[in-house]
Image (cartoon, rainbow, N blue to C red; front, side, top):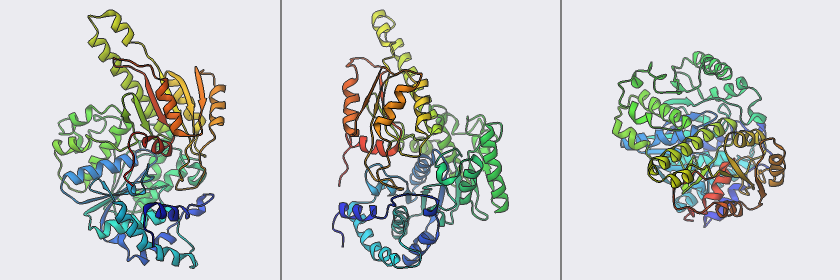
Length: 469
């Protein structure tokens, strides 16, 4: 019998494999565990969201919209930043520590029972999915919005029979497990499509890009075979989405969405609106505007003035992040110039780009060298601080790239950085970045960007927001 959160966490993390491969995926164990729990996944309606990038934020926006429509909404996200209970929320509130401990005590005998079975013990992620579904069923939610963990077809969340499925986009990530081509990854993502269940996707046709065109063909093929209605949404702009009735130029959403600076956030919001509308739930501009007034933690989160936390960990997400940073800097420059018209000296000083300080850590298996190339090539980087995270991941321990290896690569690239430092402790790395900034009494274009991994962001975030446990 566990008495506190820390004992629960130690027990849960004992189910994280030392090495993770495709063999760790599959539905047999989660199906059996859920059967032992009385099949809670069959006791609530669900919305299932997969894709390479933006699926967490899309889930967050869908949940916000439905909550504001007075539905009781469960939200399952992964991974968590700090507290395991972030993965299971109801109406925007994480499960309490005491409730989580009670649930884990309830599931523990069943998990131990499975150890001796032919199927063997469930994984860390499978236990957490089962806990989420049990929590949602016990709480009698109207809908659960559920983010896919990895891939789709063999992901533990794919036991759901949802009201609607979403595939945000398809890109190259987790290639060592899902396959090394967009087509193979698209097949895995399309595995969440169920017979007769509508599916919404932001995957673009061939006019978007060659790779996305190939991915969409796979999704179209699976949807046709499953007799599922497929709604494809061109999320590049509100005008390109205008062929969908709810996004006509006269739509109530046009002005609400037009001010969204991030292309990825824009896409996520469009998909969220489309999914809820497909459920025949009427929306208003007031509801939508309020739903989009908050964002998911750790996703382009300005935690302090000039300090941005963003868990981007693949090249697609990094490119969106770069666009966001450039947009923010240009806005600051314009604002400074406008405010200083009568003070030439002040204006000249304000227009100086003080640069970006990168605090970086990466999970093994990511295309981290290409991520560094993109960041250093496209942003005015003046300093790189390489570090590592120590938290357990869903797929293994000690998963971070060594900071010295990161620093060695940064020093070798042609886009030279003025300063490179390494820290084994991510908090020390962030403190160094904070101490490196130039004090200023006026708005500045200087930025500290903590990125490369959600696990790094989770550790760094505790410098500003301590967990309650």
